[in-house]
Length: 257
Length: 320
Image (cartoon, rainbow over all chains, first blue to last red; front, side, top):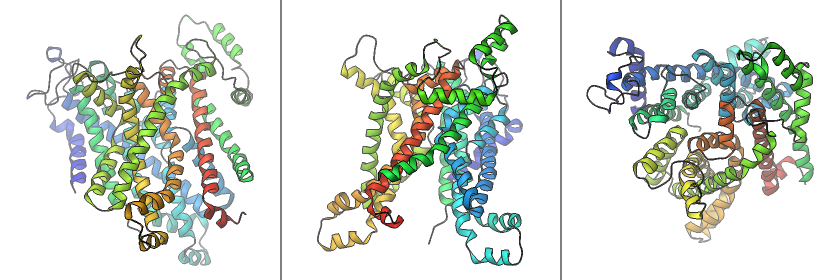
């Protein structure tokens, strides 16, 4: 209950930000640089006088967008690969699982960092990259489910009635793996947020001056020792959001009897 | 055992080739290829770029370039670093000791912490210790490690001044105490990062071992509970746990990259981020490929070890 409420409030605040917040994240105010948190600026200001609370909320928009959409991409790719592998078995399964193993063997963050450094993507491109690096876990669990579901009597019955493989997979197999996909996708959102913030922290993800929690931490590195609040708040929000997502994801896992 | 190991090693070769294609394709996905940074430089004439491309062999067809790169990787000729012109292999090897020190220390602490958390938690599953450590573990995997490192730096180095914030040792002072001081913070970040997930695996493995019939018979024979857990359950849980730890190798690499960069630890991880900033592609490609090969090798080791040590696995597959 609590994590869902917390997550919902962050999301709501982020979505409604342009309407509810008085300031814009890019508003430079050189008279108030490096202000400590207080009544005027709840989270303080950075070295250009930009209000950090506003930037954190607008950063939520970027981070939640990247996390959420990349998880959807991972879900689509992973479910497809896993379902096809689990249904088809044989050499198709072998080849697809080899591809999955190959992608899992290359350390994910370094791979993404190189990819983003090379391609210098937009936020959407970044989302796609993160999504294309996160389908493997989903593929594995969907494949395991698909292997077991393919052997069930209702699949034989459908096949006996003349259902072709595409329809079998799309209309019969995939709807039954959706609960598994839901759990894997929820966890992928948290992973996507962590990956985006790490990449932005190293300067290859969301680039300044666009505010994402990671890019704010990237900019905070230089002023951190004298103005610690610049680093504390964005990171706290990454932590809190991912924690809420992981708790919810953990509760979604069905009890096996 | 050797026949199995050889068979698995052979099966892994297509996997390694696939990885090499992925790595090679990634670097050459840049429009302009590895010399793209020169293309926007007004001082570099098109003839110079052409000459550079010819010298680097970039005018050859892609499959030829790939074959040459792969052959070079396998024979240890990893090219020359763009940063300082030295052989990539040399630059990589000289950073290994620092990374080994950090990884060794942090993995040791992670294993000890995992043991310390998982065993009492499994012994009284569902109790307050178990629930508390489970919550801590979930928090641990949700924590951005680079932020955690920053916060520790803020608290212990900048705020309290107890520990140094970066580097492997202070200038000139290479005493053991100084080296240990520098090791504490980065090793703590890495250790807690891994202990968060490993303690969960170990707890599950111990619980699963405790559910086995031999535990009931051990207790019936009057063996005290602590011995049942330590000598009987833990021994059976150790193998799947070590296997899982080895399988986490790729995550260990990513964690090391982040932590070494935050704490300016002069190891392979910071070599990666430095090379990334300079678009030093030879180093980056070698790093990715070597890391992937290492991960695959450790997975293979986990696989073979599991089969060798657990006779039940061998019996199921029908091998003598």
